[in-house]
Length: 314
Image (cartoon, rainbow, N blue to C red; front, side, top):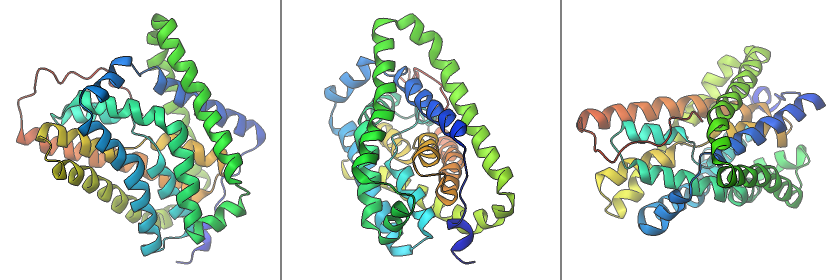
């Protein structure tokens, strides 16, 4: 199988589609912001070792490890770009539910999701440009789709930052409105993304075999490494099993929906990268549920403090 079929896929989207995608991206971030609370950030400062080390593993170490994987294994450029984009994304809210199911520290998971989502305004575009720029193959792909680093950083920070600030303002000044909007907006943005994934699969059905052969193995390997990184970081710090479960799940579950929307909106719909993000969105749910089931079987008695604040979908 040559590199052309995957790297040559472009999910062509007309200007109206681009506008809709921009709206979906804003909805994703706005919905995430509606789920953030001041208490989540206070929790980080109250017990900083676990959340800060977990955030470093998630936002700094995993993108670097991902770059190393792409340099070592040399996947097709669009696949490598997709892996870097997913690694640069913050944690997804579904990780909070999975942590609760795994009998892990749900408060730690929620605080990490909140911090990584807020920091993503800067860390996501910075990690994408920095690590994709260091790989000659993905750097060439960035030039091919005319991504200028400074312009991309600025525009992506605005795309992520404005909805984030509006969401935080809604929660602070109009909490009842925020409560009413949170769940419907998150469901709506999720359904939009499912529709785009479905459209991509339908339009490029002839590449399904190529996806299974050329992309899925990298998605599974990448996610397994993220799981190992989260677990290894927790063990290195000698955290309790309660915190280890939360950190493992949080580092290995990313907001791949955000990654997919960014690829479609900012990278001209590079099909290989989009399929990586879509594949991650499915696979990390499978691996997360499997981990939760295994840990739940080992510890069948839940802790009273492990009540999740939300059961939102990513």
